[in-house]
Length: 221
Length: 285
Image (tube, rainbow over all chains, first blue to last red; front, side, top):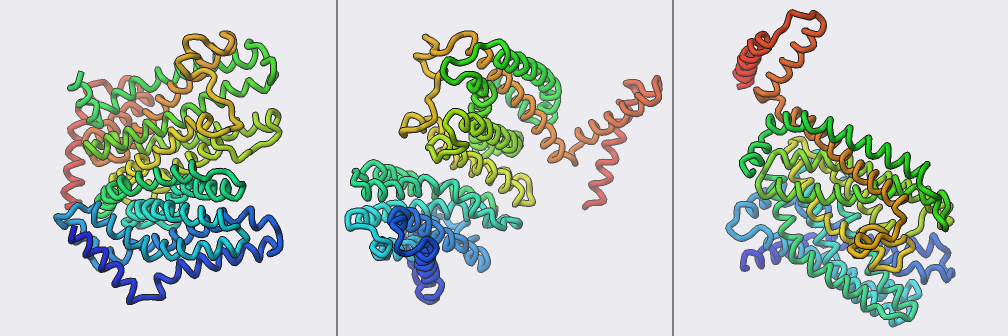
């Protein structure tokens, strides 16, 4: 457990020393959300309809952006090999790394989401649901992305493989996340999609670190 | 029984087994598909509601059923490959993916062709259609991931992990028509109630069951053939492949000059191939 804690602190420290790097996904997220009103026509009522999709797809792309580099630096400086041969279960270390990744890249998005929601014309009720859906859904996005990053980290010809692998796996989170906000905006109960997001979260927190550990061992072992 | 399974896991035994089994599966599969589709298109009566448009089920339903079955088979093979590190299961995973992608694409295309006259649109963003499209992307991901690695064993095991994680989509596709308020109709034939008391007229149901069984057999034949090729490529340095290739070359020679090559010659050729194999290895080291 202390090893996992050390990994977690190390990730945060590295990020704190390179502030520009972890701010990138947040800036990217803001710009994506800005581009849609410009493209659609700012006064259009359609903007309100699209708002859940814009915010969710923006969060997904921002998560993808951060995850791409997740294991690359560790592979280059050799600390990934140290994680592989450590006595602590690799899945636990990966979970700690992904938790730090979530705190650095996704948690700011979750906190900023009410701002974007109001900016895109959502009412208070849907904005609260948006916040909860992102809080439940973004860890799923990060953990799925971490699994895909583990699959491709050792691949010499990976190229665009990561987004291709990860986007189909991330679709359920986007469907239920967007669905919850849409339901709330239509005055319906958003509970069912939120429960689905919670179920996805439980599955991905427990199973995906193990799958990622297996994939990582296979790619580098 | 178990020893037979263990022996089947060895590539040469599997190769010979598949060599004998695949032609029969192919013949039986094509015959069943042929009769089923012919009966479905020409003998079965038109549907009272959909008219002749319903006849696409003789292609669409088997393709859709296979798209799910192949993914499940791929995930099971992937689990076997990861747990027991069985080479043959690794080959099975990567050789199933292109077949599965083809059947998924076929199911999507036939569904779209049917949807235009029946629903009035080629595509709707419905749970069943969307999850089937996600399935196609999962297959394409497996194919792409397999090509991203240079080492075939690492690639196959990465694909096995992906297949295992992606298998969550299979129940979603299957139950999407029940879980969500879907435009796609539910299953007519696949439930305990429907098997006891069929909801389809026998003249329509029989051709469908025939083309479905035929498609499964056809898939089995193609899978075995692809696995044979995969095994040959992976084991190309092994003695049995070299001996096998030598035999094939000699058989070609004997066709050209009848009476020259007998069984004795083939046997004499085998050790020579073996020595060459050793010599190659010596040079490599």
